[in-house]
Length: 506
Image 1 (cartoon, rainbow, N blue to C red):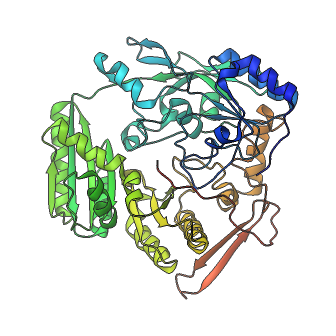
Image 2: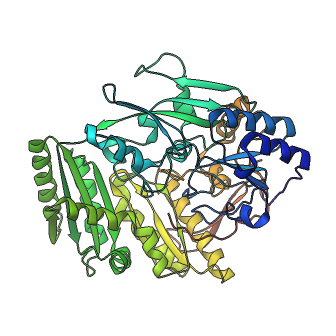
Image 3: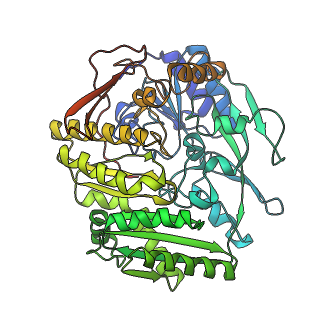
């Protein structure tokens, strides 16, 4: 990890901006911020906690003047290393900027600071019959600013969309300290969609200091169903059947047998531990429509060999089922020291084949792969459990993860659905994008961030290995080990996966 020599005078200036009580300089304190929810590490030189957007603007001017990198951070629940200080510098933590500034019930809008916890906003507007729809599994801890940076999704993305679909306007501090507002009150404002550009840019274009989000009415009725299957094939084929029938639930989540048993041992939610897979399906809307759609889902599940379909009979039962889903990654900590959660996307019609091949990849590298994911939109989250104290296990886990992502691309999918690229998958970007694509995206980044001081070393191939990719793969026809290799310049050479070890507990 690169570090940067920041002068004592520059540190004094920083203390004057945020106050000495909101500046961490001691190595032990700073080391707490070298981790997030990923397997990566990146230690900052200093950590600051601004209390206002004006302090953030002053921090940006300080960074520009001293040529020191700055990296924004919300709650540290990210899964791609996006909020880690890969090249040292200053970590800007938004935990003090956690106010809900305005709630406009009539126009169904809220204005929040970036440090507002996702679920806190929904709780604040529930009495008005509203909620904030994006619901990552970490919604009890993750912040809306972090959600904006990564364009976070969640189980209810299937019906309600990702973060980008719910952001109306942003106030942003650019790298030179200029504060700008993009978006506005109009649903479809003229000109370039700058809000869409910034949401998901992983903090490489500007520091978001204020967010205007859309609020969604709470549905009149919610039906939560648990469909139990003997095999994962039956469960995944049911997802394709629902799609073909034109049934779009609010959420459609899948757990395979291994994951069911791990989760049930921790949560005790009443999940059937002898099942091969289950689907957690939720429909909502007007009461009559929700009941009709729930019955359609039940019928289709039974036609696809579901051995049982349960309907939550109370809000408490519904919350218990969702607790099992949203605490699944944490439950894995009971069975392994480390868990590497992947985030790939495939066409949902290819789910049965994808899970079979992911299982084969895991077995070839010596792992049982657990699967819990957003089945309705084909967003996979295979889990590879390993022990970081055994170097060989970590290397094998990384190799298996790379093969899984290569498989997603082969199937017409993507390298990430909601966790972002960060420093985890930057070297894999050439598998999905041409050099011309990457050059265009870099040009956009450089237009906003010309000195590269905002969150450097993220998204784009670079650094150690120069963005090279080396992915062992087995031929589907010959069963032989092969290698796919690409580097940023289009050549070849030795490569390896960077990144220190960290247990994923998101």
